[in-house]
Image (cartoon, rainbow, N blue to C red; front, side, top):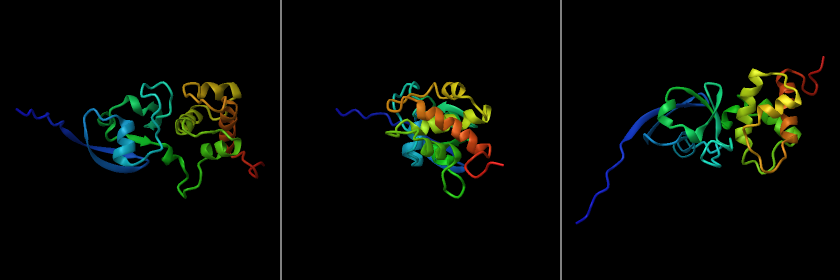
Length: 172
């Protein structure tokens, strides 16, 4: 006798990601990180630990950093999500935090970088002119196995300069 497996019900969900609406059909228990990567096609959100510890999956939910591996996609339907892909300038050039990482060599292997970029973007809104200690505290919830954090902290401070109009050639 053959047993049939019950089919998991699929839900229609609208995710608003980087300003664009995405209508997807997913199981209720689909993690947000998986929905972004597999259903929306934005692979910049990395999944490292799947326990919310490493920060590689950090995105912005209505401007607040959250771990996408800890949320079900259905729980954020209709809210504004920003992934690393949404941090670029409208013309496609690097945003200030991305530019700072490039200038200050804030990345090595790059696996943790998307989580750092989104975390720092939110952190600089709360503290637009951090000290180096404050920069380190800002990123303390994200793990990096390659850099030793020195260049990441420099990148935070450089991003603050770029955002505050103190970039090269912007001095008064």
